[in-house]
Image (cartoon, rainbow, N blue to C red; front, top):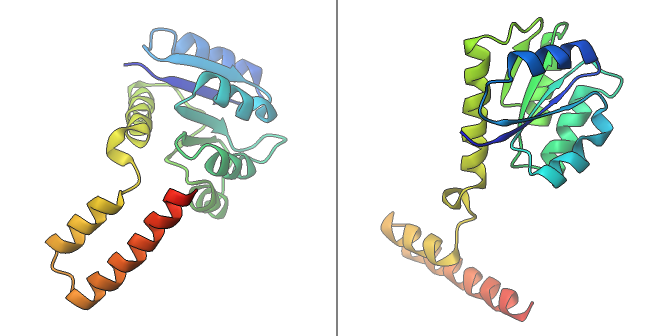
Length: 169
């Protein structure tokens, strides 16, 4: 399995443990103790998954919100040993967190499977199958589902106007 995973935690001993426990995993691993460097590394290395501690000097929710905004196809996983329900819900809803892993994390088979699934999901998000729908495809879908003629005609006129605008720019 190819993939690139970035681990972020301000506790270096935890990152060192991850390096040892995950050394035989087939994906590339990157480790940061400073979340402010994450965006540059994600751009440079084309990271698929970010696994970050929620309790660092830079709030984990803010980090996930930035990642969602700037790198929407990067899958985000939250790590925390002391996360209350409202904070977890904020991370999920505002940062679009894929999974939550409680600390202490033993880096067991289940945790490794979470990472592999996240890499697969990231590949899906970046794949051709997940592209924005084309005007032609939307027209075909509308025709196939039997949308009322008047509605379909109004949509098609709007789509033609959109096509003209796209061709100009």
